[in-house]
Length: 513
Image (tube, rainbow, N blue to C red; front, side, top):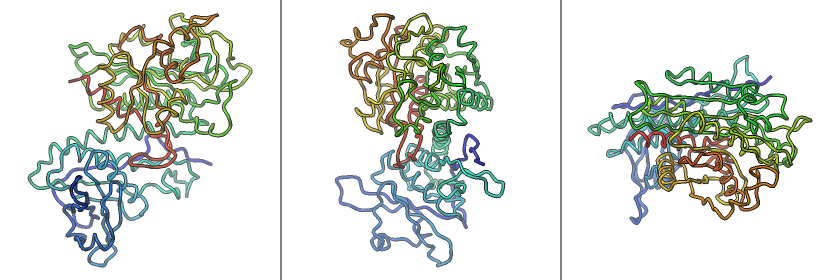
């Protein structure tokens, strides 16, 4: 018997207070002097409660490097303890790493349900928000376990629930806790959205079929006032010409779905008329179809709907933040399987709107489902900005590695806006070209378009999608590399990473100013 964790899985709660509580372990932040100063540690407040001074730091060779965390026994010699947490040179990335390292280290101890972090004087709202974000996403764990005493558990290694549940940030006297508390509250929304996207990506595909993914998103949307969810079945898809989604999902006994999440701000749409439409690939498992994948690594294809997970989580966060912006999320959900009903190389698929596509590789299924959703968005949603996100091409993993997303855009201003959103979110994007020299290669001898034309794979995939965007301002985010992590680093945990979720939220926020 296996216990699938309830979604969303529990995450640490971060609070802001103006005073210290007795009986709660203390965490002291240790920074490094900004370059080019000599290597010197900056010991934050609260060290007195731990009995830590510069000699103690030297004796135990504390470095203050970002993401370092170590237990400090209480100066009284009793069982109480505290933490030293490194904030490095003080960048936002270093503060996020510090928060993540604290909650990870705390989850290894069964007696660390709460901790209080002493913020140094002059801590900015952004630094506090980065620390809080790191705490929240660093506390994320997803694990399918057996049942223990009839109790469902979903925890860290060893199968127990994360023991740290609360982190209190103690604001320095006179610094004003209001801006810090506001920034921390917002950071928690972004952190919990990241955790949700990770939950959805990590859920095994034996559970996560198209109906489950769309239904789970609709259930969660029902908990957020003003967010509407609509789930369309395979019959509706057939009636409305979703030939790409139906072809990809045709080989599976579990039929496809189309999820629509719609946020209309209270009081009606803003005067500027902005409507952001986000489209996320929701392939719940990808065998490659008849163009079958190698066995090595196929088990990771449960995360092939990471783009859809990012869109789902972003829409929930947009509604929770009550942004004064109209935002719609579309997630075409399908399982790319092998059977007698599977689509074949050489087939011609009719997409939404009538454009025909020659299939040349059934393992390039993502662009077929996205093309339908993009065309549907153009026809029915009337967006002013259109963005899709997908684990689309192995070419992006080769080009950019595993920590950077590929960014294609039809307008430089949109590309710069997304890069700025990524920087604010702590997610890196690299601009990639749409090279018109390859446009002719998209043309097919037997259909309007060819699914996999020759040329650079990431570029030609993006150019194929561009054919369905109706000339609107559009960006394509390829997250094939950073959507999964083989090991934990900074605030990223191994498994599905939730990459792009926070960028989409920050992008939406930027369109409200």
